[in-house]
Structures are given as C-alpha cells and as structure tokens.
Amino acid sequence: MLNQRAWMIAVLQSFLVLASVILAWCLRFEFSFPNRDLLFSTVPLLLLLRAAAMARFGLFHGYWRYAGASDAADVVKAVGVGSLAFVVALRYVLHVTAFPVSIYVLEAIFTIVLLGGVRLVLRTAMQAVEVKQRRRRKNDPPGRVLVIGAGGAAELLIRDLPRHGYTPVGCVDDDQGKRGARIHGIRVLGTIDEIPELVDKHSIDELLIAIPSASGVQMRRIVDISQKSTRKFKIVPGLSDLVEGKVTVGQLREVKLEDLLGRDPVRMNLEGVSQALRGKTVMVTGAAGSIGSELCRQILGYGPEKLICLDQAETPMFYLQLALAKHEFASRVAYCVADITDTAYLRNVFLQHGVNIIFHAAAYKHVPLMETNLAEALKNNVFALISLLEQAERCGCESFVLISSDKAVHPTSFMGCTKRIGELIVAARPAGAMRYVSVRFGNVLGSQGSVVPLFQEQLRTGQCITITHPDITRFFMTIPEAASLVLQADTVGEHGNVLVLDMGEPIRIVDLARTLIRLSGKSAQDAQIVFTGLRKGEKLYEELFYQNEVRLPTANPKVSRARSETMSWSTLSVHLLSLRAMLHNSTEASIRSMVKEIVPEYSYTLESLAPPVVTAPFTSSTAICARTASVGAD
Image (cartoon, rainbow, N blue to C red; front, side, top):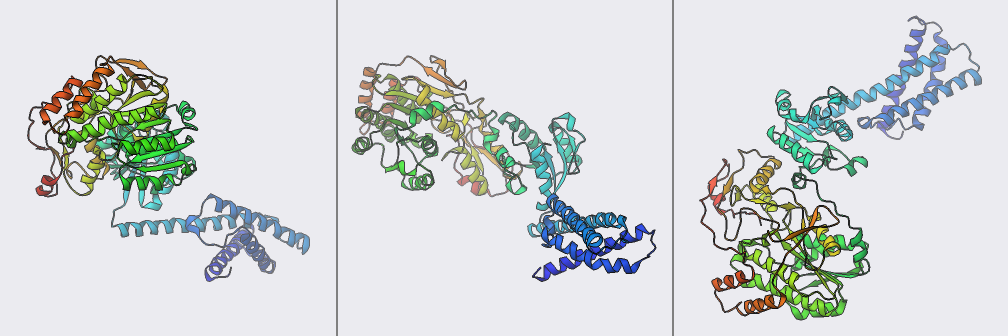
C-alpha cells in the first residue's frame, strides 16, 4: 500500500466492511440501533483485522478487470481469516462477550457479497468500456457471432469473446442432447445444418468454428455449410492449444486448406524409418525446396549420423540453414550449394561424406516453362538422375528414392515425360547393392510456385484469379504427407516400385479458388475468376496409375505399390544415349519424337480451347486482369 491507487482501494474496501457491520447490526436488531458504543468501539479492531487479512491475500491490487474465480476464493479466505481473528481477539483476548454472535456471521456474509460484488460490477463495466474503445479504434460495428460447436473449446472461446469486441449470440452442435443448453448464458440454438437459417434469424456477422478435434471430412462439411451462409468464418487452432489453455479469440485463424482436403490427412507409421535412418549418412537433393526442406527437418529428428543438404538455390539454402540451426542435431548437417548436373562435384561429395541413403527431390517441375526448355528439362530431370545414380552406386549407397509426379501418368507435358523417364530408369536399372524406389506425388498444397500461394498473392494484390479451365482438377496432398511418404518409401518399397498415396477424390481448382476468396474475407461479388484456356502440355485431370500397373498393398493401407513391365535397361540405355546426342543439335519435334519412343503414352498435340471467360464482377480495372499471369495446377 505504497501508492495512491492502493490507498484508494484500501479506503473503498474499508468503507464496504463498515457498511457490512452496520447493515448486520441493523438487521439483527430489526433496524433499531441499540448499544452504539459497543458497535463503534469494536469497529476499529474489525477494520484493522480485515485490512491485514485482505493484504495477506492480495486484495489491494485493484486490477479488477481480470477478476475471476480465484479472486472470489481469495475474498472468501480473507473474510474467513479476518472473522476468526476478530472473534478470538474480541471474545478471548479482550473478553468482550456482549457482542452478538449473529453479527459475526451476518457481517462476514455481507462483506463477502460487497467485496465480491464491487469487483464483478467494476469488471463488467471496464470490459464494456474496452469493447467500445476497441470498436471505435477499429471503426468496426459490434460483431455478432455464432459459435460452431458446444464443447470445451466453445466454452473457453465464449468466455473470451466479449473482451475482443464480439457478441456471442448462440452455438450450434450436431448433438441433439445439447439443444437448448446454455454455455455461460449462451444457448445452443440448433444443429450445424441449420446454420444458414440461424445466421439470418439472429443477424449473425461471423461464424467461429470451435471443434478442434474435427476430421478433414467433418471440417469440409462444416465449411461447405458455412459458405452457404455467406458469412465470414474462422477456426480455433487445435487441440494442443486447448489442452494448454491457449484457446483465445486472438488465436483464431482462417480455415487452412489442409482442413479442406475432403479427407483426413494420412498418418504414416514411421517407426521403421527411425531404425533405417539412425546412424546413417543421408543426402537430400533439392533440399531448399518446399518438400526438400520438410524432408530435412523430419530426417534430422531421427538422429542420422550426417545429413547432406544439396541445392543450387543459395538464398533458400541460407534460410534452411537458419531453420535447422535450432535443432539439437544441427551440428550433423552439411550444406552443399551445387548444381545437380555437376558430376565432378557430386563425386567429391560422395567420397567425402560416404552417403548411405539418397532422397532425390531436385527437379524442374513447372509445366509451361519446360515446354519451351526441352534440353534443360532433360539435362536436369533425366541425365542428372543417371549421373547421380552412377556416383551413388560407385560409393556403395544402400537406397535411392526418386520423387516423381502424377503428371508422369499418360503425360501430355514434357515435364511429365521427364518424370516418367525417371521412373523407368529407376524400375529398369539392374538391382545391385542399392535399392531404387520412386514416389508419385499429386499437387502439394502450399509448395513453392503451386496454385495456392499464387491465388493468395492475386487476392492480396487485387488481381484477377486466373484459371486455365473451369473443369480442371488435381489431386492434393500436404507437405508433411509428402515428406512422410518419401521417408516411408525407403522402408516399404521394393526395388523398382512406384509408391502412391491415396489422396482421395481430385479437387476442382475453381472450387479451391472460390474457397480462398471466401477465406480472404471477400464475397463472390468482390473477386473475379477468369478462365484463360489450357496451356501447352496441361491436362484437365491427372491419373495416379497406368492401366497395366499392378497395384500392391503396403503396411499402410493408404499407400500402394505400383509395379509394371517396362523395357529392359539395355534397350532404355540405347534410347537415352540417342536422346543425349540430340540435346543441342536437334529440333523440338525430333526431341519430342525420340521421347515418345521411350514413353509411348506421351501425347503432345492439344486442341485450341475457348477464349477467357469472366465468371464474376470485379472491382479492379480490366488492365490489372490483363497483366495477371494464368494459373493452372502445376
């Protein structure tokens, strides 16, 4: 009690104690006032003991805007201790027995009510002022929200909403037993299917999804229904934050695309991976890319003897180095900035480090760019692969995992063809001391240069959303799924196999774009989708298997092994030698023709498609749309 604020709180609470004892005296004597001298002679002792007890339990700080159950408990403890001390001092030390026993009880009850009540009233008033000030600063009208879910996350969320300018109106939950129940006074209004009707009936501004345990399929349903309501929606982060007591309005996030896969993320059993990697020297090519960097993070967690990160992109490699520097095994990482086509450098790396396992993620992947850079696509995706395999074999590598693509199945793009040739090389190369496996990917959500970051950038800068075709679809997987699949391929794949993840049903790119528009807080009237026509080499849909491939199960029911009859290594080697000789002195047509001999399924003749079509009005100028690059599904 050394500052003015504490003295003011002490005076206020002393006044409340005085009011309590006078009120108790009046009530005891039916509002007459006998024995005034006895009352006022004992009041100073009561005030002194009450002040000492309140100081002991920290009731003079005055930060009542945060008062809660713990403060109420402290008030009860302080009053109980003070009353006990008052009884002992008055009756057994000072021997004042004329003081009515009922006053001890009544005064304690009134003191608890007044001390607790003033805190509650002031807390409510201060929070109301804060809400008004926050809304005034943000120039935002009061936000009426409907909470989706009526469990633990919803309870924590509703308790925190008023402090952030939100007004919780009600909850929805599919558990019919909860209908009509109240959470902190907020009633469960109905089920999730009733959201579109409820938002109009109760003038809801925003939806808050508070079901952190929802699966991908459940979340997709919730989001689909929320979209029909035409209201913005956000989601509570996750169950770990809930358990740790971190679920607050400030932690609400926009629904991530991982929630909208239309399936539950595949969980890999990586116990075998831990045994395979521990104590080994592992190389990741393309280590600074989206998948490569996630691979490096996961691999390092298994305690390899050494991790070799190889990539030609210096700046991304620098950021990877910063990220891995925080890991407990950071001292085991070597960073090699080099081109995968530099055979001499690769030979030195293998000799210096003695690599045991290779995960080959380095490749050119953008369909339109590779359609006009055939020689570079072959050099990087095919012939660099052959050189890497030769060096790995000479140095006694144990296993090699190639990252391929679903574009390798019945390819129409040159990039897809190079990926298919890579699969053929891995499948046809004679089995020796080293085992070769391929992994066939779909589109990876959020990877560098993929559709999602490009759509997000277009929305952020006010450009048009450009899609090549309204019916184009793609298979999607998350970055962690992709990295885990690559790691598991090292343990479950047999020599020459192609491993494929069950990615559920393909997703229409236009649906993905519309979802992103909604998640960005825009309506269908605020953003424009333009269809620009399929680009050279691009397909409407992708496939995961050839018809002649035999699909075999693995230990994970969500991962299949594909095996097919391919040309012999000697025949393939002759074709590859001819193709290498054509790189710098042949026409595009002759190169494509030679590639088709290796990959008979390759089709590179496309019909011209319809001109761009605008599907929704847009607020920005047409000139911006004209400058926007087309986005397909690479």
